[in-house]
Image (cartoon, rainbow, N blue to C red):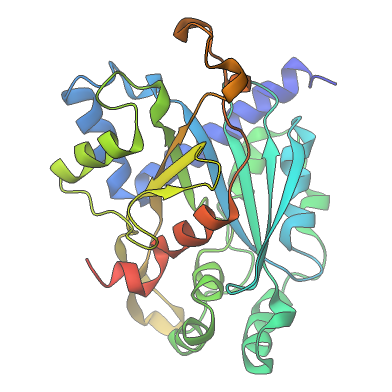
Length: 304
């Protein structure tokens, strides 16, 4: 069932709020968008299709995907495939949007129970401050309230010691304990760009020409086994973060991703002007995502 016009209007407020704050927090976003306009790739940043946005969550009873997804299911998103990342101890799902113009959503969740007792103790000392599912008391028809919720901390600011302890076992856990629900990244659909920029290979060249550093885990271009989904990502920038007791530490921020979705074999004879989202390879690829997660990991950010 198609969501009502008022729900879609609320979704616009939420998505715009996410992107506005994400641009403020991730300097590469502005650099890339400005370069695309100045080099004539697009007329304005509004011409860029957002392939998907991604969030990271903690798998504890009152939070995690089961809580977070209520927000976007309310606006007409539909839950799709599940992915399991054994090495990183994560579950993830993707959600199909209500309109062609909306980004897909990818939400991952740390399997907290799979970590060592000490890491579990640290995580729960923070997440136990949230005693009930916070989304249940949120007015999902109030876009400003949802926007504010997605950018407010749900637990106290961690100590440097706790952050560094988690970092040793799970870089994902350390990222989430500090950043909470912040949008982790957005993704430029390169297949909609003009010739010379409309493949990940070409777009990577453009990015590197402008001094953007790319994630090299699994190669700069991550390719799905069927060849239909190609992805790359920037390396997250290191940010000066303030921890509990006024302590400061340089930690990983967020990154930008790029996706090229090939036309499905049964639609390759369609004229280019008729190709819609439904004609291209949809969904995600666990192998690609596994490497892209590492855009915030020290093996990549240490190259900066």
